[in-house]
Length: 366
Image 1 (spheres, rainbow, N blue to C red):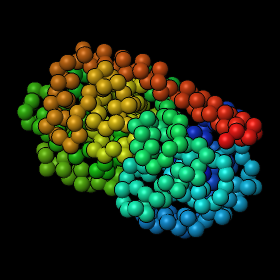
Image 2 (cartoon, rainbow, N blue to C red):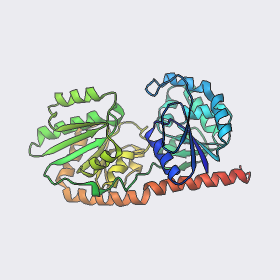
Image 3 (tube, one colour):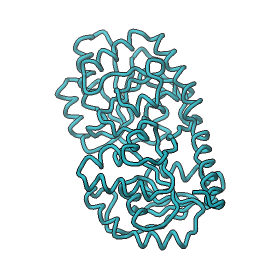
Image 4 (cartoon, rainbow, N blue to C red):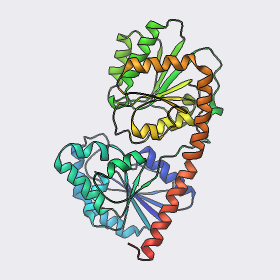
């Protein structure tokens, strides 16, 4: 098939989609407002005058380029066009008049964007109406999307490469209790609650040899490092910065407990939680539907109500005390991910959906 993604070429997940379909010998194109290269892919850069780090409000300029996107798509003549993110690239597609196409919703476009104003809600509805087919990475987000459209969402979760993320990457042999996370250092991901919880543990359970490893960068990196100093846990926390997927796999595998303690519902699907489980590392998650869907609460994950450092600290200490239970939880987690979220299975489902859509269009089925 000839497949065209209308999406940011610099996005990690888009690159992963492209890599898989290129390896399956499909012809892949990407129409992007961000300039970047993707191996084996023809990237059609549309210069909107907006950079990757510019504000969301400046991205309104994207809408001025709908006709240009339409011309590019008409030239490509793809079998499948899949736009990603309903309220930027998706809105451009809706304005372009191109049809048919698939629209993948991601998270904040469904959870946060329509709450800003009636106009924002109308824009989302417009994007969903104009798309012929809809994808959602989780059932939880599909349920949220159902508030704005009666169309069916196909569930297409982000899979994890278990050749990369697996317990075989573990090499530690020490007595420390290592916990951590691999997330952006922004308020949405609850890093401050993790730090405060660790401070409670360090001060109340001095016998516990706890170490914290935090990978990622973001707008609040300096603030969180200062918070760690104020809490007196600087020597307990190791800041890893932005790391590669290969390094992330080793980090998850060498933790005794992962922590994905997001605070907002726009965490539509817990990729990090899936990666942790794939490495047979049990994980603490917050009570957010998308995260709970990405685990088996009580069997592969411990669910803690969001925004409570005291409850988070209690859960971490209990996990420390129940090491045998945690090991078994990790084993169940690896098995769960292999059954539900293995990368090739997830993408083969998408590939089959594409073929079904292509056939339906050729047969003239509405």
